[in-house]
Image 1 (cartoon, rainbow, N blue to C red):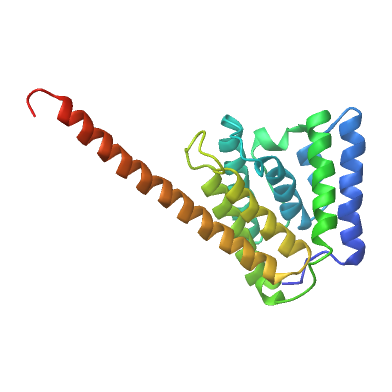
Image 2: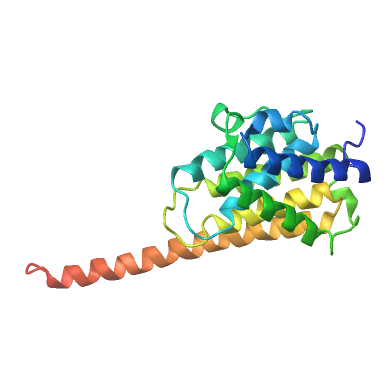
Length: 220
């Protein structure tokens, strides 16, 4: 299987795609599915990176969190299975990138890529290149989507940690930087530990409240 990673010119195409999206978002808008049709295999990580940015902030996005989680899972599954281009759920494919909100997301995404390129470089490439690398990054994106979809509404950072897992996985693949993929894996572990700590705290305090309520009952 040929290496489908972006070359220098294709990386420029990614920047061009962001610039084109900015232009469309400021005008009549563009459907996400139409935009991704021009990027080939890079569209998996480009789409995941673009959609992950709004979830980095710690405030829950309500039903959008579940839609986003399912979309990441679909992207990761298809990338891991070796698909040449993504097939998104209708809700995501027909998502119109338009308006001030998306303009802010696209500008942040462009700044994020520019910032990452200051310290990313091709290294530990076996983690992110070839069929195994595609599968590994695809499963990272899928796992991040599954963690994002965990129903823990209003829990601080329940969106942020899985979103960072997805962002680092995508940057690692796009920049051929295996260290970023390893950091993505670390974010996944941190997310699991965070959810486990919250669950333990809820069980502990729940048992304390139950015990306290029991002392107030006359028959205890």
